[in-house]
Image 1 (tube, helix red, strand yellow):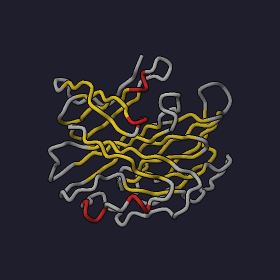
Image 2 (cartoon, rainbow, N blue to C red):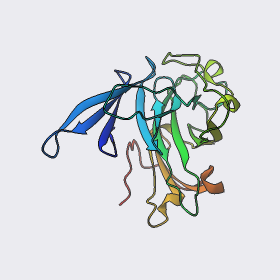
Image 3 (cartoon, rainbow, N blue to C red):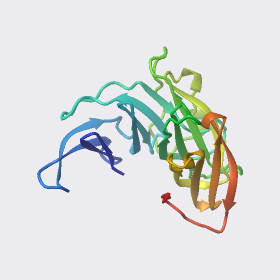
Length: 241
């Protein structure tokens, strides 16, 4: 993916464990790398989002969500993490988890707090009959408490080793783990803010479960199912028009 922010484009590189910073270079459509943000080796940054100059990154290979300030560019400086938390649901299945999508909601009158939605993918060998989860986090800037380091960097992670108490997470606080009935969530999206569509979140399975539309409730801190279509298979992206 790529994300335009101010005068830059940020590109997470899962294999290089970096987030590249690109700047415009001459005519429209031309860019050059003018910096990078390094992440932990083996974490595999997959998707990013930015809110209030805080960079949020979902790391596929460690199933973690991190938050860190964006240093002034252009440079290769990497500022310390504000928070580093697991997104894996708290159960004891023998599963292999890989984080996928990341969304941050836009504050509105109906949903005044920006909330972070992260999808999980369990590749087995054991699977929860309730499906994979969407983890919902709240970012509390300036709260006390340190960041959490995850104990395993292996792509094959057993939940009992990987799960950490979210109370220790510092400024990223888990508010819900919503089981979706979907197997291997690859994509999800929020509806457009302009017409109130952000009340809804759509998510799709890459394997089983089809597509589900959720309504955001409790100020966005939880999700309830509005509609489910199990005939739609292997959807990996959604765009509202």
